[in-house]
Length: 92
Image (cartoon, rainbow, N blue to C red):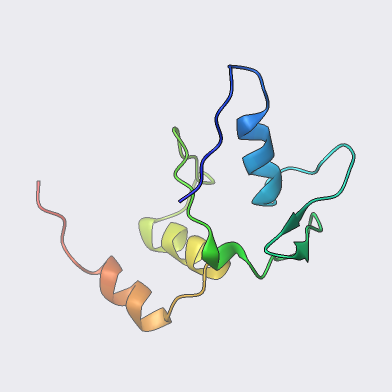
């Protein structure tokens, strides 16, 4: 497990978002697991990274199943697994 440590405003969240391909870098080059990062292209290493944002935001108007399919498209997962998990009732 690895993490980013530093004072507020040091760029920790920005660096993570760049590595995940969520925002482009202003300058420089980044390699993750030996692969060069190319903004706008699906990165083959994303299945090896877990990220839990403090305030997750999904596009408005998506159903829960559509949001799950969006994430499953980024991280390799069996469609059967996604559909099975989406049909499990959540206890309140």
